[in-house]
Length: 229
Image (cartoon, rainbow, N blue to C red):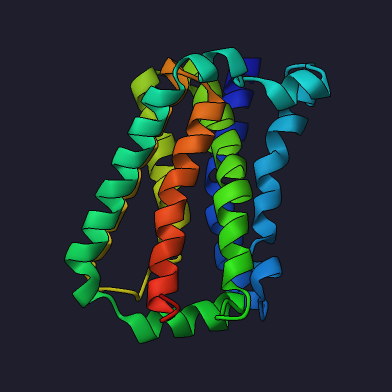
């Protein structure tokens, strides 16, 4: 097996590993939010991959794809894109909210991750500021970038888009009917593809900011479902 084939196999395994770990945690452990999020340790795997496989330093592995100069130069465009995507997300919620199973969502979040009114503010803060960069670092800055250099670029877009979508959609199963579940999957894939292009056009800071803006709407919706606003 040559080095290129080995890299592709490792990257595909890392692509499906978050989903598998979420399923295993749900099946075999009584989880709280901390334990249910422990699978995100995988999001730091780029540091080890680049150190062992690519022989890069820790610093270069950590800051690869970040360009503050490019971010500053394009910040208003990036903010505009982020606000636009956040607005689309909010409008979709307003259209389908009557079909959401609010009580089921609250019950599942409490049962599977111990998310409730007492801790949702802290969790929301974590999601907007920290979880967003972890996901962008892994899905865009690592998986998409590495696969794009090894396989057909459109295949890299497709694989990372589907992987990103499935990693998120596992949390939504049971929240609404199949047609809206398929709509959510399509929306997540579309979001992933847009973010891939943002990385190609700008940098990882830009992806982080846009993801954080969209997650702000996500947290707002959570507050609404929990009856806090």
